[in-house]
Length: 176
Image 1: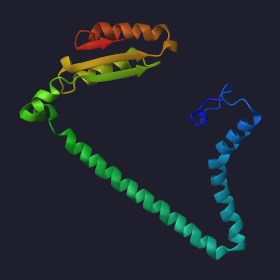
Image 2 (image 1 turned 180 degrees about the vertical axis):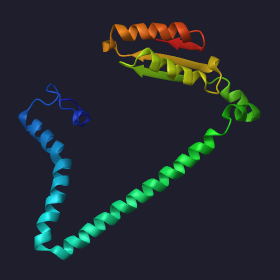
Image 3 (image 1 turned 120 degrees about the vertical axis):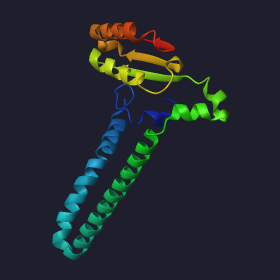
Image 4 (image 1 turned 135 degrees about the vertical axis):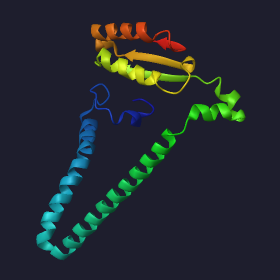
C-alpha cells in the first residue's frame, strides 16, 4: 500500500481499489450526497404526519436559509460584476507605462497563454487568437502555447498547422 493512500480515495479505478471492502466503502461514500437529499425529503414527508408544527417551522427555516443564500449570492455577483466592469475601463498598459516604479519591473515579464483544445474547429481557435491579438498588451511579450490532446487526431494537427502558419510570427514565441 502506498504511503499516502488518501490521495487516491476519490479515484475508483480497479487498479487503485482492489479489495471488495475498499470498493464497498467507496460506494457508500459515493451515495452519501444523494442519500442526504432523499433523506431530507422523506424526513419532511414522514414528520409532517408525526409533528406537523415542527416540520412547518423546519420548512420555513429551510426556505429562509435558501432565500438568504440566494440574496447574498445575487448581491456578491452584482458587486463583482460592477467591479469587473470598472476595471475593464482602465487602460492597464498606460497605467504601467506612467508609473516609474513598475516601468522596469514589468518590462521583463512575459505572459504565457496556454490554449488546450480537443475537437474545436479551426474557426474557434482562430477567433480565440484574434481576441488575444486584440488585447491591449505588447505581443512581443506574449508566449502562446497551442496544446492539442494526442487523441484529437488528424483534424487537430491540420488546425494546429494552420494556426501556426497564421500567428506563429506575431508573438514572442508560439509553441505547439
